Length: 239
Image 1: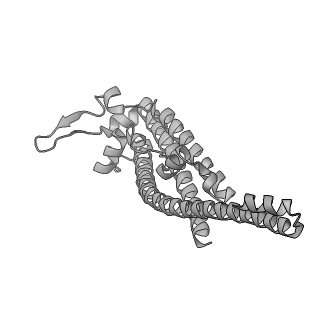
Image 2: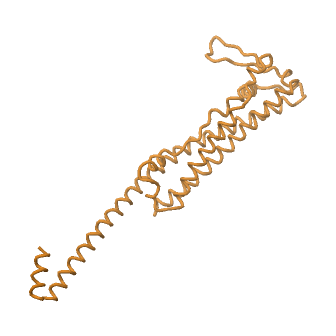
Image 3: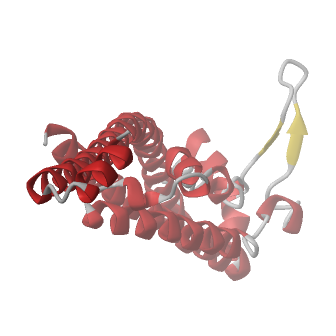
């Protein structure tokens, strides 16, 4: 319709009308593009807000679980240290408690119970729209760094626990196992005098302690990174 009107005005050499028709077309196209861009921007902002909410929940859940793991790993590490100090001691009046004995013969499995997980919400976004949906480039980089850090920590943990020493199987005479009738699992006793006399057992206890320390340090790093991410997400949510 506008085209027919322009042709009519052109034939009649109505230049002012032609200019106005042209202006109407240009303005219409411009407004249409702006509305489209505005709708797209609004959609991106809504998607970003929804993702930040999922991310905040994901981080909170992961942080709570990781803090619990860190508390457990730290307690195990300290308990194993106490057991090692007693084994290294020549004081015959000092003996291992039941818990200290347990942590000693279980020291080869302590690091195997800790996992370093990627954030699932970030994985899902990366496989769909990508992290470019986030307006905060610092948050984008922090999320990428966290995912890579978890991959590194998982590989490190696998390497650390790949060579831990199973003292119960390697030294059955020092850690004799017994199956109790009212307990489903086997328990091992600690022959403290034999442990003190065996340099190999003492060295392997120290080795397992060092490996547990490496995993504990990795968990500490994970907690630190999660807290940093949590702070960044809160800052973006308030904007």
